[in-house]
Image (cartoon, rainbow, N blue to C red):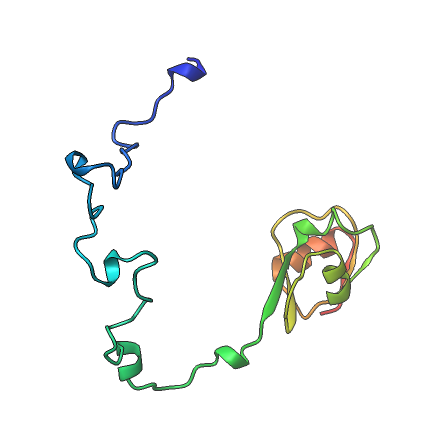
Length: 147
């Protein structure tokens, strides 16, 4: 089997609809847009939810209940597997050092350490939350956790 023997599956590639290529093409004159109107113009179309000037559904329905989105705690997640490549053995790992290493970005109210990956070096970890399996991996490698 060589590269020139490969081809796409039947039906995977479709012909492009070529617009404005003369009347006999079937896509000439108005280029499949009908006659006049908003949708026939260049840059046409309306925004999502627009109902032609009628009050849209999302504004007609009453707003009910409480939404905690603005007041939620954002938890920054870091995996133990990401620590080995970025920190020396015996390093102090806290929110500030994680940000300098590029493992945390943007707003976060708390930092949680999760157990994905392996740990070879001993670290001193100061974060808000630690999963049980991440705690076991850090302590098995000889590190300490102050959560």
